Image (cartoon, rainbow, N blue to C red):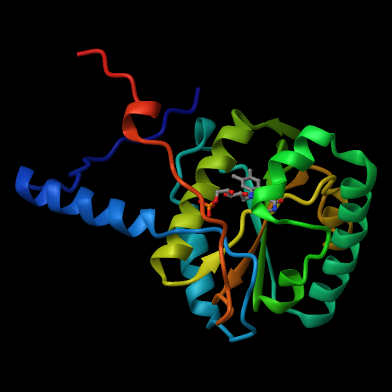
Length: 222
Ligand SMILES: Cc1cc2nc3c(=O)[nH]c(=O)nc-3n(C[C@H](O)[C@H](O)[C@H](O)COP(=O)(O)O)c2cc1C
């Protein structure tokens, strides 16, 4: 068995008062995050996108398989094609494929089949999950806890985008396989999320949502 070499690790530590300040500041920052559906065309430098993806890739993953690929699209023609295909799928969803209950749950959010943010936002990141991989000889290898791993990396990506002062939307066009085809991805990769990244439009609004309180979501066993 191949045992990885271990190295010393000195985690960052803070005094309790500093910790309190940091958790408060981070909560305040994250609590300002909202899903944005109206984007500006204003450009964002590629270095910023590179760095938020690097941040996402620091996520833990099952057996450290890092079962993700980030497809980053700024090409205008490709964004247009992506939008057209996404809207065709969404049209079928909103006009038949979604249940009445699902449509009712979406009503307060105000989403519809028009996805203009796909070609307005300067960047689209499609997070791909790799259900398996290939070794150097081209033989299939296993990945583990792929959904959990890619979900965590996506959460970190969203946090990094927000920390940069940019906005995104967690978008899940369904079904999403047309994206893998359009981007000519290999058979082991499946689209997981589509994230437009950029600035909010000046007239942007968001639904007036409330988040559950700590009492509603946490149970302590002291
Ligand atoms: C897995 C997942 C899929 C989502 N899919 C969509 C989507 O396809 N379209 C959309 O407009 N919003 C989508 N959302 C965004 C949610 O509607 C949004 O996160 C929720 O309403 C809470 O709003 P907030 O993100 O502003 O806090 C999705 C969110 C998640 C986590």
